[in-house]
Length: 193
Image (cartoon, helix red, strand yellow):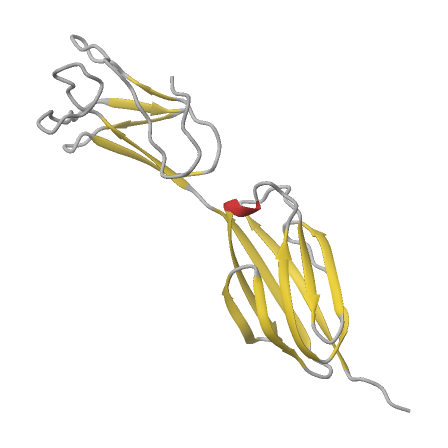
């Protein structure tokens, strides 16, 4: 009788920082397999598969899936057989009796908020060419306080996606004439305190 040789594929999932997101995997090659609803530090277990070349694709039903950067590394024992960035591994060769472990790591993208303080001499709410920036002004982002530097700016870095309250400590003798926010993202920034 004839039989096809087999190997095994295992998918492990890592999410940084740890959250409740769940991820699905399609494993397509000589036959198709799946590993569904994997969360942080979970494994598909060993999936017995026919030998051949496979494509593994990570997907998620989550609205926030696009907020993550994805890396993967696949090993047979200690030997790295595939490594890269993205949600798709192409050309993964499974040989007879191989056990390939592919670890997908999703890292939540972080952002920054940069504040620029300037002297709006004509009170038009816009920074005109000759208006000077102001150093030494304190700004609070939630519980974090920072002070503007010589360039009139301070930057809050490494921020997880979410809502933040930004406020300034108004100095005596000054009036706030306007506040505006711009985002490099398509979404608008519409609330500040």
